[in-house]
Image (cartoon, rainbow, N blue to C red; front, side):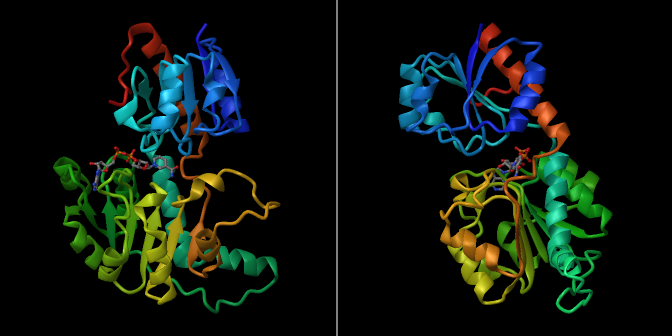
Length: 329
Ligand code: NAD
């Protein structure tokens, strides 16, 4: 029987994986801890580890996993920036490249609408029986220019939604999808131009050395006054210090973040009774035009079903044949 050490477990993971595991009979041990250098020893005696977005699989962790004879790292997410692919040794890596682009694209839309129309403010107000409209002024999305960075599965799903609002879409991607550009009706531009022309910028590219801090002092300075920035991709795409500086000048209209640079110690956990705080995160939360969700964009039942079913199948493929269509190389 294949033994799997399952890290960073939440109740919903157990619920969905136990259901699909009825067809595979893996021996799964669920750990609440994230996988990192301190917890790697928990993987001793297992065949595979199953991890999520904030587990850290660096060189040190990989040395330990190789020493314990781990054969597979099964990512139950699309991004793989948290795994050091240069130092895998004998270990293979699989991921779930597509579980629901709609889940993330719809969440990006929810953040955008919420920020623009100040729904988060009116919700709090109405709870207090305050029905005033002061400070709630938004703008029509219709005819506005949306800049989409990364036109992969999620970027394209987001473009389709935005088209429904009657917006003009410009996009930046290292690898242009000309067919999609024609079919969905959007235009590719250089990143600088996207920053200069967009009323709203939504990030849907992966975190790589090239995209790390793609939103920084320079790109922020190019943007239009009152731009809205949405990040449902990875926290490190934005230099938080530079974003806070730009927010403090009043230049930015609004920011919707589902991810944050130093999210791993905070997101997906109840920290409300802890005294541990992150200064930049606290600053962002306190800003009147910033809305943060806790890496929630993927969180729909459709996505969780697909993550569990594909992860179980990825593991089966690797142990049966040594290969898998979802292997990360
Ligand atoms: P995808 O691989 O289908 O698309 C990514 C796109 O980014 C591709 O078109 C690629 O060419 C482009 N790209 C790569 N390098 C680039 C660069 N340097 N500059 C501009 N574009 C570049 O991936 P996807 O399924 O659309 O997911 C996109 C990202 O969304 C993932 O990498 C992940 O980080 C993030 N994500 C977040 C959540 C969440 O819950 N918040 C869930 C799933 C995925």
